[in-house]
Length: 169
Length: 67
Image (cartoon, rainbow over all chains, first blue to last red; front, top):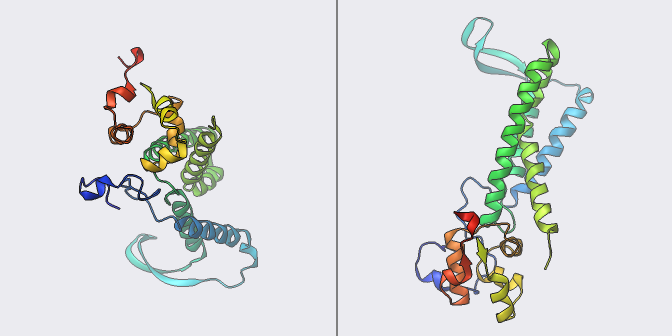
């Protein structure tokens, strides 16, 4: 329902119940939450069961730079790339699927959670820069790419829980 | 900012849930408003005032701390 157009629909107080009336930029439909959970579970299983995979998924793919050559084609096992993409998409879907009731306070909480997640990310990166070296440093940053979304999801859910529990009527 | 939502609601004898549905937000938002934990947008303030059929200043009021 277009609420903010100040058309006739403005005078429909009470007729529509809990329709999403906020303009929600960049948010995905609610069912993406479940797709996201499924993708994340698959990606975790994919990584855990790495040793069981006998076949490489080798593909010839174009790359921008490899061993001194620009814009060349190489052969590469694609399973890592699949894992990365599944994880990123899964977490993104969970993080940015719409809530049941997407109102202005939820939006407010979203903003706060994003800021906390970014701050945590910066702190993590500074700590890693100071405390980790060589292989551990590289390993950390391989996984650190994904941390901002889980932190955001946890903080957002925690805020929601806090609101839900605080002072019932 | 102070508000008289809880009082107005008591006068009309309606629940948070009902008011929430009428102004199209979640019940938690109304709860946070009444507990002075959330300041509504102008749109929501106007919608609430319109629902109670009162001027917005009668329901929402500035406090010392806002200046």
